[in-house]
Length: 83
Image (tube, rainbow, N blue to C red):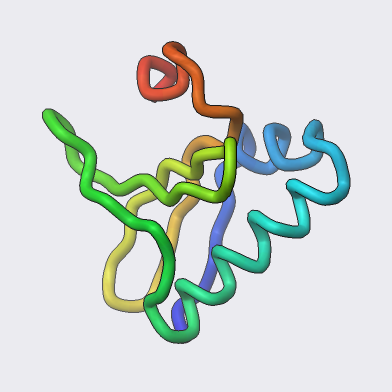
């Protein structure tokens, strides 16, 4: 299992979400950390990955032992421009 780490900005983003999307995102991150499942794609033009959880996106980087969540928010035209 990989360790999940949130940046300060990602933690703020997660705290600002309603309860149900917050739970869904944490379940999805945990499932990915445990067994590598989830809707994951590499970002184009920059290093990193995105995880799709319904209408929300988690932008993250990872190495062998850690998942570093950088941004968590609704899918919008500004989502990928924030990072």
